[in-house]
Image 1 (tube, rainbow, N blue to C red):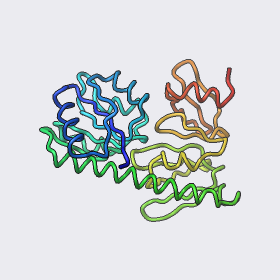
Image 2: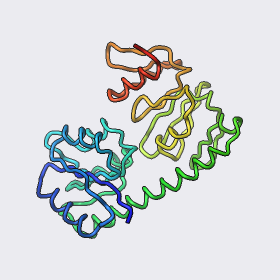
Image 3: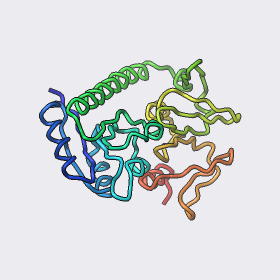
Length: 250
């Protein structure tokens, strides 16, 4: 049986124990590889262990799950909120949250949400395999373009015309050198796999930039890139070192 890894965050150990019990008993194909009841410890362990599924309590002492998702790259995980609050649906959508499980926690809700996470992981794996095969068969001409599917049309743009991409939950906005913007119905993680040319780099969980359009890199008042259109885009702390190596900055 194939296993899918999971991590649980809740500031109450009782809730963690309940989720662990339900998953171990009713979701045998999910392996819990870690738990935490504190904010910073959770971030450290999640970035180290790289689980596929996150079960997150919204309120974590004086912090929230959304504060955590601002730090980690939330596009890499299937996120299930386990919470007593039901008024965060709009905000949760922006963070690509898969599902809500309301407290008090029920077996049925945990199992349904977990199965939904597994289905999405499997769908992504199929998509990645198909994408790899498609990429392998691409000619140089076709690899120089990106197709952007929106609700009512499909735009075909040249990679060289892209200044940067910005994540907005399950959507991605492309900013082009002619000043136009295109909104795609896919998350930025999927486009990161397509924009593999040397001129593209993901500087933040929310941004992929085209280095050809970077005017300067500010290192004094917080690391950020200034683009030719005047946009100032933040470089996340965990990507600074990798970005410097990429640019061969010493």
